[in-house]
Length: 362
Ligand code: SF4
Ligand code: SF4
Image (cartoon, protein in one colour):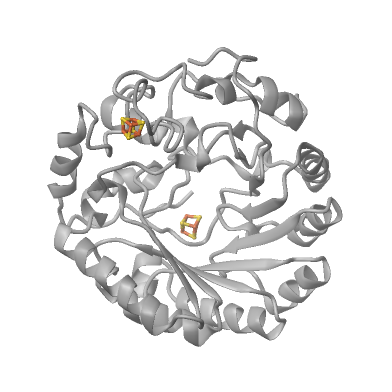
């Protein structure tokens, strides 16, 4: 583990504000933890306002208002206004279920800068089945139209897995039809609820190859119309991604009850001590929290990362994934082809089944 104080601190740029874990949907790939935080433990709007002010003072530029479903908060408009008043660029990440048209108007008046709506598939029946919520698809269409009508920039998030990865073209067409300027094609990350459903969600190698070809074709076809972001899914990659831009380097995640995490899945690593905004300022947490200092810099690394030329490029990959796949959070992310456990990843990717989804419900 890194020695606090010896690693130069960077300025955090983004804050993920998980306003609540409540959500009407039940996505089997949800990255929320298995132990969801209850409503009566959620931070109130005044505390969020203080946190946003401290974030801005620390150098944070953007706040992502997320969940769960942030629309489950009755004080979402007040919270959004506080983020805007703190000088932060405000991005609402929503399932669209639970944000009424009049609420959206109030959010716009409160200074909301950007909206991201997740869609589960290009066709209503399949989309609602994956979300575990009848009628979700129709509500997404309606909210997207309202967002575009208010001239708020819209991004569509598409989480792909075995059941929908062959329909990327249809989902990009839907994003275009909705008026989005950007579509993020994200593969399921196997933490939290998603880890429980891994075998049922895992795409085949052939599907991943077809999807990459489809993305390239769509990028050419729609150049100048929509930006398409997509990366190779972890279990089929040769090199890991620089998870969260490096641990404790560029972002913070505040849970509904106020715990501050270096990444949204960090609670899956046992033994880390997370400080709360209820007891500490955000600056104290960024500088001194044991969880933030646990994997900063490179001193905590083992071989092959420790002597690798890419150690300050990808930071050894994802700590949560290293722990999930090896039981050691300081191990090289097994996604890396140089990692001793790399062969295990291929075996897990091949372990697919058609078991019914375990939907995520509180
Ligand atoms: S992934 Fe699905 S269930 Fe999880 S918070 Fe988002 S919309 Fe809700
Ligand atoms: S050995 Fe470590 S630092 Fe090198 S490429 Fe693999 S994960 Fe990255």
